[in-house]
Image 1 (cartoon, rainbow, N blue to C red):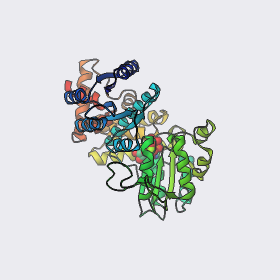
Image 2: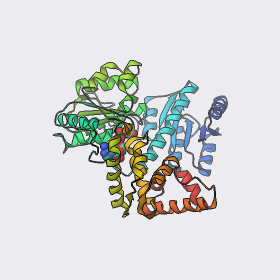
Image 3: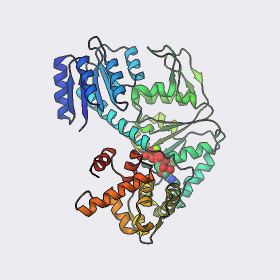
Length: 434
Ligand SMILES: Nc1ncnc2c1ncn2[C@@H]1O[C@H](COP(=O)(O)OP(=O)(O)OP(=O)(O)O)[C@@H](O)[C@H]1O
Ligand SMILES: [Mg+2]
């Protein structure tokens, strides 16, 4: 259940929102004034704040600042009836996640809040993921050989490439390889995750904004497409782009010009575009969720990455590659017992190569007598860590595993939680008991 601080001076709006959000599973703390809100923020950090902009002597922007000061990871959503471009942009610059204009639909509020929570989780995931994608691709199955062929043919050209594949199949690895094997290799590679940037921010993120284009814009902000000039822009999760913005992106792909927010003229940029999606774009086009003309612009060359379960012959190649990597990193000497391979090869890998990689990282550290056996794989796939505290000996074992991983990560708890396959707060809870 997510705790949420609701700041709203209008009593009827406040009670409607409280009731509605509680029904939707939030634990709501309501504040009727900025003073009450500051008070609550001082007494406990909130993960999520929903605040009106026009309050009293202080505004939602002050709430935003204070919430972020108390908890930099706090997600703040602002709402107002008197929305002006200035406040919106000042709010987003101050780090607000998004902004809703009154009168609003309760369902709209809910979807913005849900996106805020998802974005927060994604941020956490990035903070924990210190690994850059691999710079080489492992796999010698027939579909991967086809991928390599297309990759080497298309890389040196300036062609737009669309990469499709389930999560964890290596889309970002392919995008980086294309860039690195192109004439643009010495120039920037700029990735942008179109799915996690709030719709209202994507435009300035991609196209930039001019000094003075909004309150507090004391300098020009360079958009990613300009930063990628002469290099490559990687538009990740393009399938998540909202219809309104799809048209702007289409225009960019046609004209190769950008116009930053507040700029009077467009400028030419020379950017190669690589797009990726884990949703099938054809399908989105058929459902009417993705513009067909944009799809055609992106789908000049398509690379489809096969799920790991359709190329079982690659599983042990990858497993050994990751085992070597993590043995090097953690100074371990773990090996596979022959019984491990059949279990690894027959698993369905819904998270594809990423899931296999994380599993091998964990097993490399935790292997007893330096061997990864069938039952270790089996257990790790079924339970993140040892089933918790069913018996004393299991609890001991779990504590020992946690300590080993913490040692390997030099005490980095976020990383340890990722390796153990549990949430950070679960790790804290378990640590408190050790
Ligand atoms: N063929 C491969 N060889 C080696 N490592 C790989 C391969 N494919 C994927 N990986 C590794 O798996 C992880 C996930 O890859 P990547 O981030 O490219 O996936 P993705 O398709 O972009 O996933 P998502 O849709 O979830 O963003 C990375 O750590 C990457 O290095
Ligand atoms: Mg990706």
